[in-house]
Length: 331
Image 1 (cartoon, rainbow, N blue to C red):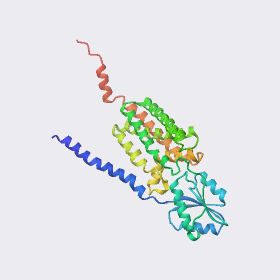
Image 2 (cartoon, rainbow, N blue to C red):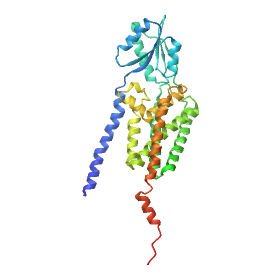
Image 3 (tube, helix red, strand yellow):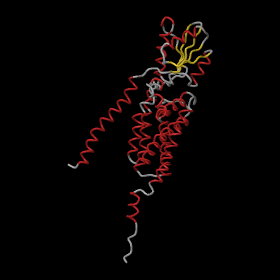
Image 4 (spheres, rainbow, N blue to C red):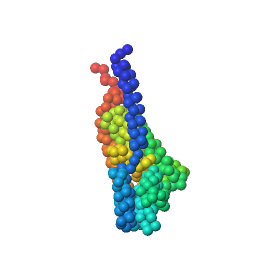
């Protein structure tokens, strides 16, 4: 047997376990290490009771990032604007907890347990869900499960554009058109049919479309610059890393460092955060994720356009031109 096929077979035998190991690490490790890490939480009320409660939170070093507020309305506003995930309000009748299950049901449960343990006597305290998750998806399961299909849709769009040998402006227009259509269809399913997102319909469709075009253009751009292996690299980045690092099923602040931050720099994480802001919080805290997606889309589309110019003199086109060239006249 020739040496080259042997080397390819050996590479395949080693590559498959490597991919499986990477996938298990990317998906299982963050899930097994979920814990609060600088989780933004508010404390409202007058001293000294509020000070004592803040000190109890700070005893867990590095777990919570405390924001102080003068009263309950200020704490509610901070929750509605996605500055904090929840807040403890100290009153004359005892502490009260304000949560936002729409921001993260996991964080809401975590705060309920943590505040109950920190309260005097360790008893239960009243809990108010300021921004509640929709009744159709109280645990946020549907929203969390939606990121993987969007990542797959983006990878598929980038791969199809590459394999169909679309170049330049035609490739960019195809990516934008396909992503816009995905945004409309996905929003019709998630909002109009399932009712798991409840914000402005067209804004949600725009977020989904922007997420898909950011992923798809990144994949197609890598393929335009690196060739077909760019599709695999893009899929690895967006699916095997971007999806589990997104923090959509829990919260970025619950993932181990630097996974939580890195996930928000990738389109799946930025898209999940932006969709949550638009769907439940009237667009508050949407600027950062929107900018991240716009940068990825701009860089990817630029690579597609530049890479398309580089293929004008590729071997396949020279062969096609030679096949259709007229035969030289006989002397």
